[in-house]
Length: 158
Image 1: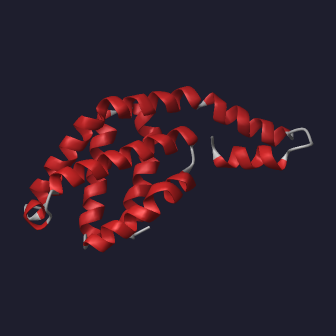
Image 2 (image 1 turned 45 degrees about the vertical axis):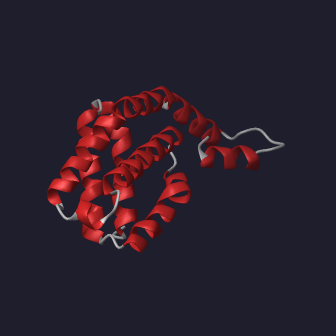
């Protein structure tokens, strides 16, 4: 559930929801079908998105596979993990959830491995470009801000 709505429901315990609170819930519920559709599209397209992204990253950075043992497998794993967390964040409509549950941790890991901010930025901009190209227009518009959040946070340029 969206953290803001959960917080609001907890804060309203013992009283009726105000009109603005009711509106917030109605607005969220009105978008659930579109958010579920975006999640379904991401699930169906995940393999293709990851494969295309890795192909372009390896092409742009030919030393990547030589410098990182199991770079393709780990890259595939990490990109899939990001897509799945983005799908959850889209459904929740909660960018803070994405930061708390993936990005803060993954940014530390990527920096610890020694990936440079430009490499990370290029990788996740590539992921965004390919993902948006694979999704319907409506789903792409819901997903894009979360992918941009990944690029900014993971590259340290946010």
